Length: 188
Image (cartoon, rainbow, N blue to C red):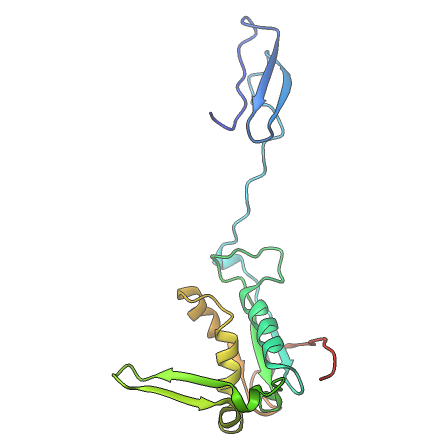
């Protein structure tokens, strides 16, 4: 059955009771009305790529747990903090992470956690501990953590390009006027 209410001409009946499947209730209406009964469901809003307003956020990663940092960055990149969020559209903002070299891993993960990558050739599996990764390329450790929290499809590859990670406190994006984003957490 159609979701719209049905109205009949006045000569067939005086009062019309119509069952609206979307609401599951009976509505009374005058049969002289040729329009549909008011109160139709509101259409779902779907943002268009040209309507999205992007902001720039800068996050200081000094003494912040890596997983907590990555989850906040992924939320900003996807746009889940906006009321216009849609899972199939890139509605997120740009994220700059500074002081990636001062990120913290809890427990014994700094020594025991391992990052893997593969060259694509047989036997090409490479492994590096997070202790080495954080000393040599801390930007890569943060990028891997954020990438793991994004969708594994074309949208995820598009979102990761809006992430800018720097090991030190400086970044070259001052012209975009990024707003500071503070991660509230208990001291580790």
